[in-house]
Length: 338
Ligand code: COA
Image (cartoon, rainbow, N blue to C red; front, side, top):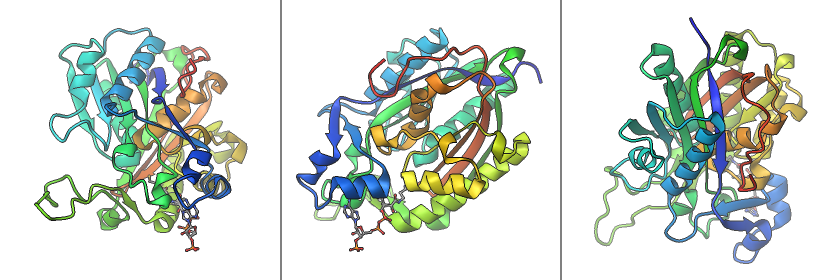
């Protein structure tokens, strides 16, 4: 048992190129009204030319370390589907640039569920005694795989990074992280894909590289609601929580209608669902820690937070966290205004 494994600090960052719905209207067959009503997204941010996922991850990681008052961790885990390169992984460079030296550093790839998978890994490291503190960063630059002419994906996704330092708190922090309920369904692999770039589809002369994201939006929508709701139920059951006790649902920010549907199925009031996608879009692995960071001023010690995600793979998950007492309300925000 011992002291709880909890969150010691959080931080978020989005890059500087701001893209509004009005900007998208200019070159896509879409409207601000459609995007707002069908997805909830109003603004997203994209990397500038030359900027990459690790640049976002470093900034979010720096903010989380500062919030935690730490200059050292034992492990860095970067959840990303848009690494800087196929080889090497992104985490070692991030660790080095953060001044963390030669600590263990590796990437986790679970698409939009990546942060929860990485947080589960980090929590296990700390629980097992292999680490005292782990920096977990969800970072993605989906602008690098978007087809700018595909109105079903180009309007949704944005780039960003969010981070959390996970380590041992004190008894005053409450129970910290509860059980993680993670799942996957490889039969549904075709729903969200970037076919090229890996060993299955090699780049041959004259052959379509398949470098762009493809998503079967409608099917993904229903699968996301079902998987997020059922994993939330499992996590709540493990934690012994009833729906009316949940103070905040921090879900993957894919579509406001998905978040509303999950809340409805779980019978959690919609007012307790953290909505951040209107300000940054779907930032994949960054989405949960960015939403948590943006909501941080509202979080009170002892608040019960239910996390849930769904992404390509398909993958999904849920987890519970009791917000610790040691973290004061913070002004760290997810969109560069801290
Ligand atoms: N602007 C205007 N019209 C659009 C549009 C856009 N950006 N994108 C799609 N449409 C049109 C479609 O062509 C279709 O037109 P039709 O009826 O004439 O054929 C109509 O809107 C409805 O399309 P549909 O795909 O049913 O829309 P939707 O309401 O399901 O919304 C998504 C599409 C992608 C926003 C939605 O399905 C979604 O959010 N899916 C889940 C994404 C997700 O959770 N990802 C998680 C992992 S990242």
